[in-house]
Amino acid sequence: MSNKSIGREMLICQCLSLLPLEDFECPLLDYGKYKLSTKSLLKIFVAAQLDQWSSYAHTEEKLAAYPKLQKEIGVSEISGSQLSRRINDLPTELVQKLFIKVVQKLNQLTQSNQGLPDGIGLLSIVDSTEIRLPEQLCDWAFISKGHNAVKMHTRLKVVSPDIAFPDKIVPSTGTVSDFESSDILIEELDTTHVMDRGYPSKHNLMDWQEKGISFVVRITKALRLYTLEDYKPSHPSVIQDAKVLYGISKIPVRYIEFVDEKERTYRILTTRFDLTAQQVMDIYRYRWVIELFFKWIKQHLKLTKIWSTKPQGIWNQMFLALIAYGLSLIVKLEADSKKTPWEFFRILQTYLYKTVSSFKKALRLKKKRKSRGRQKVPIPIEKKTPSFGNVALVKDKPKKSKRKNERKLGNY
Image 1 (cartoon, rainbow, N blue to C red):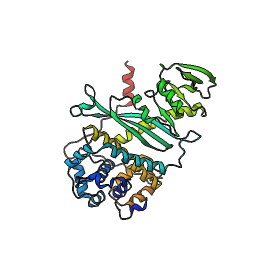
Image 2 (tube, rainbow, N blue to C red; image 1 turned 120 degrees about the horizontal axis):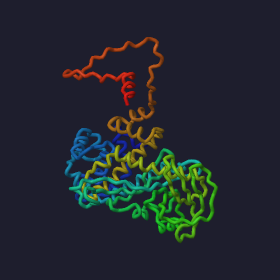
Image 3 (tube, one colour; image 1 turned 180 degrees about the vertical axis):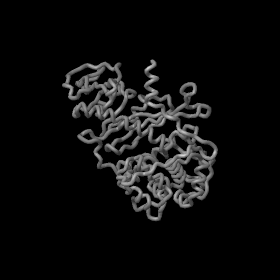
Image 4 (cartoon, rainbow, N blue to C red; image 1 turned 45 degrees about the horizontal axis):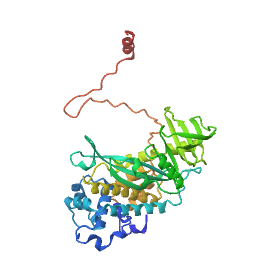
């Protein structure tokens, strides 16, 4: 970890000190808000995401229990009602600004990473996830009867086989389609964009080609293709590999049609003529990384546990959850840990209120093999008394004998 850890023995304080909050020191930003600055507010909610604080009351209890944490955040006391008001009033542009700074830090730490091996390179996987909201409290997010929700349209940057992070998101109501978010998320980047069927249209595809945007995208049967040249399939799963045009397009793209192990057919358009059909299929299969990412943040950062029922509060929470994810990844990268993201985050959460040195020691520990080795002396079988505490006797159901079962089967 960096030299900022000097004087910050507790791990959670060291983590919060890594947040790039230099631009939030301006007195004008907090004019009239003397009790709780924007900087302190952001630290509180990032800590809440990292440690899975379940409510405003839980937040109050945590801060009261750890004076060192209060000092790091810059508060002496705080009320849940105050936090509730501020998260709803906090301009989302400020939280987005902090998220962008965290992404810049991650880009800096991973600038030597070349993406996936064998010339595939960096990927930008684009997709969205839905977050359900309470029907009675969120009329503004109405989709249909009994279904109120918002979406988080996300671009996940894959910089290596085991490192990926969101570098851009677009919060929206649940009625906004993936197609409608594509202009914001799909940009001229030095990556290959990977998308499902919700994003391409003839207009979008031609626009991406004109801008030189690299892509691997699944298409529907409705898009008519015109074959210019067929290539010999180089993989048994490939039905067709060809150079094609679509609609009124004038720039050729590559078309690969393949089936998976469950006999499902996939129609893929890509600009990557330099790769084998196997590599293109691998890139599209890698799209599932973003599904795993969505599952991870919902489970471990409790994104489904909302802090607000108002639009601005929910947009803020989306960015804060991703800031917490990015912060944990910064700690992982600076610690040069080889553990999986889940293993690392589990240890991080376990040691949040312990010292940085004990956390580093835990990262170095190797898993112990569970083995008894060779047993030289037979272990006596312990007699079990069927019981359920002090109130009842319970015994396992007797297993039916094999002969009895065979006799039963013979009667049919």
